[in-house]
Image (cartoon, rainbow, N blue to C red; front, side, top):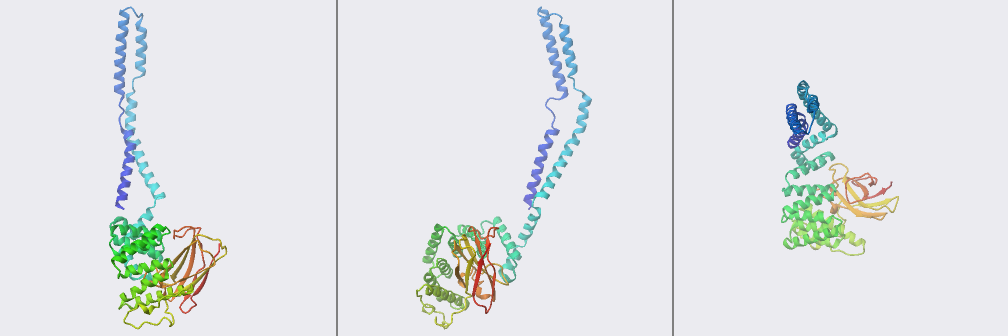
Length: 422
């Protein structure tokens, strides 16, 4: 903010000098200088006339001399008028200078964004408070606080472009908000700063995986393959690999990664339960297509008794969503969201489908969670909605088509119907 005001003042000073210098500067040819020049020219001309008359080239030179004298008198500068002009000149440039400053300030206050700049600075000053709220009190955070936190963190990263952990946090925040493009930009910056940090590399691979560019998808696979070779038992790497396989509907590949994670989660019953629920979901998807998948118990080596697969499926928050449209030819990017009906505003789970064909039925569960600490099964009441956008930008636009919103409470049927209508 201080830099802004310094630059503004310097610009006003430069503009003022551009106005004052031409007004107050003295003319190179003053009144006295011009009179002297005229006299010198008159004397030179009289001398030439005298020479011409002596040589017999000119008769009656007095007439020419009289005519030059009259011209010289007509061109004499009025010293009183000059004095009057000099006396009034300070008023001219002072008035102009005052007008310039008042006009510049008035235009900025009218057309500028001084209020927004002030609000921006206030939000940035609250970054520590907002960080604590988002990280520790997620269920009490409002939409405005999340937006303020993103703005403040983005501002901090512009001031600290070499802070790789800040870029990682900003990338994860954008992933949670469903802004894949902003997430990719932040994760890419973090990856360039710390290409050997596992958390950053897996986050970067996840951002690449969300892209519609096949080249970026292939790069994500290559990065994860290299990571799995270097760190075959890293839980974060295995989790990201499973997520990538699930995005590609490679359910067997996802189950394989989750099964490898289970022996590494001894003493973490909550995470084991979540992984088992994800495996069960993937198995159902395979069975729905007529295939078969390994049972959970085959590789789960936790010390606790493992429930048999044939028992009642464990609750992983799964909800089945049927989407219809009044116009079956609607095309674009379909985003299906699940949010908490009361609590954090960031989506709990999101699924994106390009050029869907309606009617369409999909499922969302804890395996589609945007953040591990915010799963659908943790909330007794959720709301389900969808949006059809003409491009991959997740930010809401005027031409987006939004579906109805359905609230699903604990104990309700986990099947909803959404409809698009213009």
